[in-house]
Every structure is written in C-alpha cells, then in structure tokens.
Length: 374
Image (cartoon, rainbow, N blue to C red; front, side):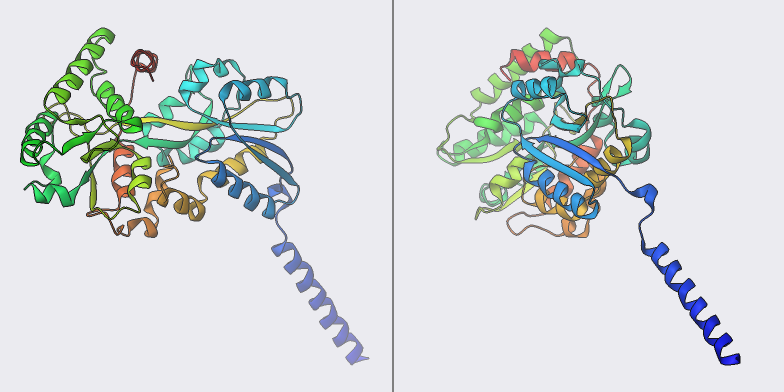
C-alpha cells in the first residue's frame, strides 16, 4: 500500500514537471502572429528583405510573406491603388518618390509609439525628421547614403600627399593642380562621371543650403566651374582619377580592386564648416487598411531592423547602407578591409551618418536637385 502511494506521488510530480516544461517552452500565445504581408522592395534591398521574409516565416508558421521587386514607382502606385485585399502592404521608397508621385496622399500606419519611440536612439536625427509628415511619423528608415571622400592612397603617396590634407575645397584645388602638373596632366583628383558626379553635386547643394534657393544654385555652379577650370574633375570614363565623393556604392566598386584606398570625411566649404552630409535614403512605409494587424507589422519591421547577422553580410558587400546605427557596433564590422587603409569604411560612413546635417526645408532641397537634373 505504501509503495502504491509512493508511486502515485512520483507519477503526479513527474506529470507536473512535464506540464510545466511544455508551458515554459511553448511560445506565449500573445507573442504569436498571423497574417499575410506583401512587400515591394528596391533592387538594392530585394535579396535582403527576401531573406528576412523567409527567416521570419520559419519562426512564425501562420505568416505568409511575398516580396516583389519595384520596377518603377508608377507601377507600384497603381498596384497599391488597385489591391483591395486586407493584406499588410509594405513598400520601400524615399521621401522624393513619396512626394513626386503623390504617394504621400495615402493613409499610413504610424510606427512612432510602437517602434521608433523605442528604437529612435539607433537612428540619426536627420533620418527621423525625414519620415515625418505634418509632425506625424509615417515611415521607418531603412537605408541611408552618407557621403564620404574615397581616396587612392597609393597614388597620394606617390605625389607626396596624405588623406588628411583634404580639409576644404581650397585644399582640393591646390593639391589637385599640383598633382595634375606632376602627372604630366594625366591624373585628376575627383571623378565626375555617372553616380559619382551626382554624389558630388548633391554634396555641394547640401553644403550651400543655408542660402536662398537662387543663391544656392549660383554658388554650386561657381564651385563646379572652379573645380573644372583647375583640372580637378575627371569627366571621362576611361581616365585615371585619384578619388571620388561616394557612399556605400563606392565601397562596392572598390572592394575587389588591387589599389589601396582610404575613406575620409568630405572637404568642407571652409575651416570649421560642416563635413557630415547624407544623400537620400529609403524608408519602409506601411499602408493603413481596414484590417490593420499592428502586432504583425511591428514584429516584422523590428525583425528587419535588428536582423544584424544578415544585415552585416549585405552591407559589408556594399549592397546597401542600413540606417539602423546599432548595426555598426557588430564586431565583424570593426575589422579592417584588405584594400583599405585606416578604419573600416563602414565605421567612417556610420560616423558621418550619425552626425549628418538635418535639412530643415526639404522641399527647397528637392526643388534645387530637380533644377540640376536629378
């Protein structure tokens, strides 16, 4: 009889342990999400967001996510207008596309209280300002384009200069003239073709934005003329150059080269003037629908932002630059890159991004860029 009682107690205790273990290991029902998400992504982030979607679905079996590549924003606008489903709809765009195509007229999910209020310290202040519409947050920063000065240090040493010598545009002109003459007029300092030209132009516009619109255009044109007249700008795709104003794409273009590079902050308009500027990035926007699934939206977007392992792989390859500054604390990013002297370019770019100038009149900035053919 005593044995029966003892075995009964042992069985009861074992049963309780099993039940408690199941409850501890089973995800909280309140954390479970379900629903369907449609995503429209740019070419630069498509593979990353596809990988995020697949990983998210693996751990959230009741969620279905499709990722579409954006061919053009007019088609995207048409898709958003004609899709009447209650799926969560997320698309990537810059503030420029948003205002240019009237996408800012849509009704958007506000991620402020649930996402950005918690993670705001991980974004530069200028990025948080860009996702506001009438003081209401309507998007989440995804990518940025901090602008740095890429320099071929192997060529610099050959002509007796260091990357630290390029502090102002006057320095660029002085050094550029000297190198142009020493190289028998074969080497110009700055590339000014394709995207490198637009990044240079964008930097000059932002460095002059504290003036009236017409004065900005006048001064930028004067600076370009001075750079051209002093043999600073390389306008040919087949000529050798010493450096370029660029962002993450500059890293992608130079990773496999045999040349020795270094990235530093760009030249300023004068000693003590601002050197930290970032060109247009992209944001994630979530359309408001009748059947909003805020729990799913928040969980997925936070997953995309903080998915450090995958993010580091993509940014290290130069595919895009993440706006999420915590990413750059990853130990793998601290390591130097073989053909770059000095700090890892991603660390330099993240420092520029963190301190980047906040544009107060964004409409003026966009209008000036449009006047210059952007």
